View 1: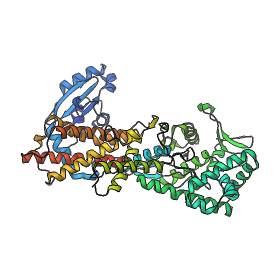
View 2: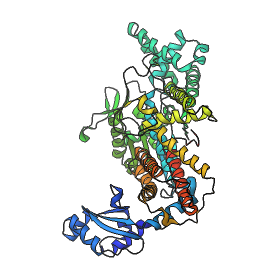
View 3: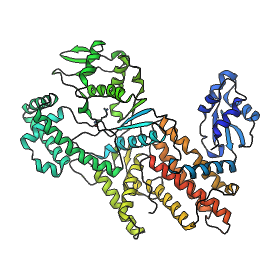
View 4: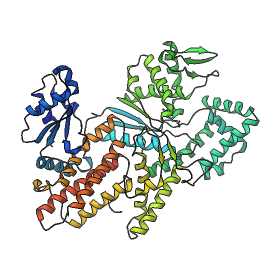
Length: 566
Ligand code: ARG
């Protein structure tokens, strides 16, 4: 495909000597509104060199630049020079590209196989996989897919919370009140019950806490009984988690959780001691971070046992050594902001330049509309229940609207689960949001079902047209406003993915596919696809197919399936 960006950069470069074509290339943005064109070049950085206001620079450049045959318009808008690509050329380039690249459309080798770790989900063993976990799980899953798509060697890690004093508590509780069979029948809720009971009993009998500490200590020292019990709890929990991951279509390359680093901590602690990073504080070891406006970080407890942060430090060192990452991304809620800033700083203080490559991708909280979710087990809403309920409700809708649909159950799952995931990835990740059933399952508005339905509609149109999707079409027939807008939208896809990766923000893709679906539905409303004019039909069929493909690829990147019938 013609690289319009690069062509525009060359055109600009003739009049901007202070910037190389490559630099110019890197500066392009997508114009805010499509009527402004396809590429926007900001002139703000040029103000110093040209000693003029950006607005004026843009105007002068727009006047001088040579459009050539590829651009039909070059104009100034505020401090930007906007390029509008020639309609017929763009149509041909983009539609041929999509038809040729298919499921790969939008992908690239930008990442050059550089290793990017995306750590996400990282649920705690023996604790419920609740609705709140959808955030890290689906944001992370999407980022993992995005990085892979862009040619990074992405690694999906689940840093399971499978270590710490709470396992001491569980072991004690199990030995006192637990029953193996009961737990194996319904692991997480039963383990949760034990955990809750432990805390109630420990209020009355503080000795229990001591015993729990002792058992965790045994675990850290490879005591056989402690290890067997711990492993059993871990296996039972993982089995449950994996069921949810399967429903969500989420894959991990590694489940190296906190326990994995228990034997990797001493070396890091040694290095910290030898670099004088830590100081003793009443038998414990801390890192004083007051110079960096942070509270001290507790690294080892008085009894020598490790903490959450100790394991994070060890994990980062291990990952650097084992994967030699280019980026090491942590998809974890913003409540842990300080935790990550503290240990990133510690690695920096240890003089490891790769501290800067560790990135905390934060997100806000999810809350529930009071009472609308009725599945209350304790005070917890299991994610699996939400996904099942969404699937059930979707099946009801299908039974109402399209009872003869084949693979009804499969489609209900793809759409129901998809709806929940789509809503999750609709908002800027940092924003808090309230989960809403009504919004999630609506077929109208900016929802998963709406986008999937648009995709299915495109599939059904193509089926009806019953003509092969061909490339040798008369592209000038796609010059009506609606078609042009759709083509412009298709052309943005690659940029959108790159921008989503730059900002670690899957919602950029979610919003894009909503826009594309809306644009397509406007097109479809105004333009019959199957007409008496064979050439016109052929051109429109190609366009419909391109939209189908692009929505499918976009849905894939946010972790959704694209059923062909709904
Ligand atoms: N298991 C932790 C929790 O549920 C999240 C782990 C986040 N990742 C990390 N490397 N600290 O809070």
